[in-house]
Image (cartoon, rainbow, N blue to C red):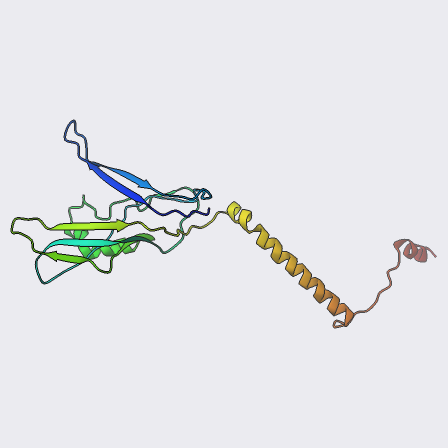
Length: 211
């Protein structure tokens, strides 16, 4: 509700364990500056592994590729309200597959685009730097920003009732007012032919039958 926050700092630290069978792990630190009026409410939880695809080429041998762009979120359908959505919490590349087809780039991109939620790296101007020594490695320097995103989700029944009852009541009042005006116009101008009927009380009707 009313979240107006922007990512200020993002830090990713890699730790590699070499003793006692410890595995490599990543430590993530992400901070958001927020205004005092900002509130956080959990409507939908999404856990996914995404991909940022970058392609660049140059006729001259290069030493470094510099990338500076935004990683944007793309949705095809709204998320479900409540619960945990972890259907895309799988690796984009199946590293355990023995088949070469699973490592084909066209297959990887096509399978990734079938997802409902994806990410795309917007970098219109990657910079290709030349001047690499014979024994020097090729370096990719990337600065990836995470801008504020608007995530769509399907609200639940009670949430719709909570926030939409004012609209329903307003529409109902307008409808009742219009219907009342139409009824007054119809009867005052005799748009519909009406026949007056005298209603006889039930007691008088019984007396007539007895007589």
